[in-house]
Every structure is written in structure tokens, then in C-alpha cells.
Amino acid sequence: MSNQINVLVAFATPHKQKVVELSVDSSLTVSEIVAQSGIANYFLDFDFTKPKVGIFNRTVKLTDTCKDGDRIEVYRPLIADPKAARLKRAEKAVAEGRADKVTGGRVNEMRKTD
Image 1 (cartoon, helix red, strand yellow):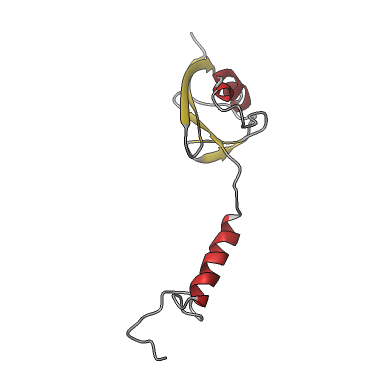
Image 2 (cartoon, rainbow, N blue to C red):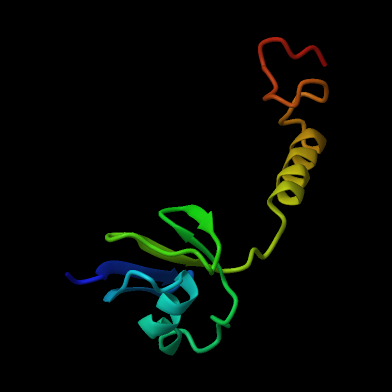
């Protein structure tokens, strides 16, 4: 009986994406599978030694193992903190009069009494 499983390793930048399909031993860790995939050869400017990874959009540890048919996704680091960016957009909307200062929701033009 074979202990081989089929997995995908995926990585993308804004301009390029690559998905590598490979058959590996079921005992390999996520980190070992990413290294074995050779995906680092397609993206020379990204450090694949300790990336954030997930399986089907659920974050996993590099030491976890995979099941047959799993898709390992390698994540790029965030450029900006999502909460800080959302707060900045909300403050801008309030300052421009597009958002209600109390509720934070959209301004209702019908009820506006300026």
C-alpha cells in the first residue's frame, strides 16, 4: 500500500501566480512539501523559509501534515494592518460627510438637516 498523497502548493503576487501539483509521502510536513514543490524557484524575491501558510484558506502550522487533495496556500505578509486601514477609511468618510458621525453608517440625504 502506498502512503503517497496528491497535494497542490499555491502562491501568488499581484502580477503572477503559480500552482504546483505534486505527489508526496503522507508523513511530510507542510514545510517539507512547500520546499519539495520548488515553488521558490518561480518567486526569487520571496523568502519561503518560514512563510505563513494555510490549507484551503485555514491557517495551519508548518509542522502540520496534509491529506490527499489538500491545497497548501503560501501567504505574503500584509502591507498594511487591515484594522488600521479600515479605521482610516471610516475617519475619511466622516470628514467628507459621507458617513454619519454617530452611527458610522451612510448619511441619509432625505433626513439630512444642514
